[in-house]
Image 1 (cartoon, rainbow, N blue to C red):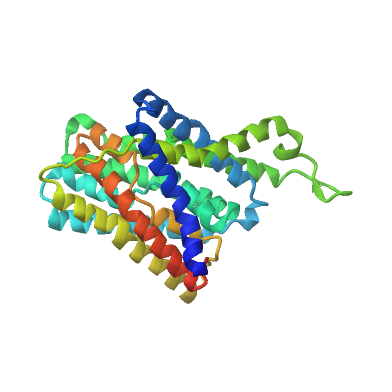
Image 2: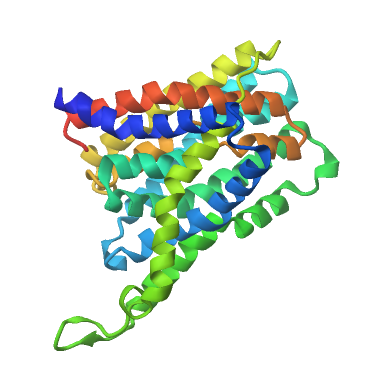
Length: 338
């Protein structure tokens, strides 16, 4: 019973805020213009602030578990291969092949993953999420651009590799994590005060007027992002896409977590290269059990792929992920990994 209560407490707050966003939009309380501004506020300001704050809150570079970043990269490559195999076998339309692969490998890591990791493991788990994002976000974004471009083979889109590099460099989340790591690295050169054994200068103590707003921005990120996510949901019947929606939902919401999280447990127990604990597994769950990214639909439209399929996969993988995340949390809690 304690395990089920733990799982409910981890998952239900996320569901309630998503439902609240959907209700507020359906009743007209939230407008389309608010959604546009809200999305920009979350992705360009609040999320980068949250990631910076959690990286800077790590006590030092020596406390960073680099193996979790390595496994995130390995896991994303595995997802790419899974997506390619299933798209090649089951999807005929070129504009849908790239969408299926993108949906399989690109998670709603920032919006759902961060609050999920915090619910399961607290602030230290979120710090691991921030580290994973340094690897996962550029890989997922860059590979998605390349896959979508190569699938449709439209020369007017330009060089897909150049587009991928530009998209990664301009990503506000990467900037937030990068600045956080830079600040953490600089902190290693700051001398200690012999009387207190603390560094003589820190942002949190000596520039509190700047550090506190960053912290506050981070605190509003999860609730605002989840409400905006719920408000974007549109339940529509798309004729001719039933097979593709079922396949995409199965891959992202069921096969992906089973393969990647199962492999993580095996590698952590059988090899010395990977060392995962109760603060790491919540971050891995947030990456591999989260639904497909909400921005997939926007990217699909930009890359002349099937936008309708991308939108439906966002909706249905989010719904299916409720079952998946709850099940994963119960299993990991039962065997003592979280």
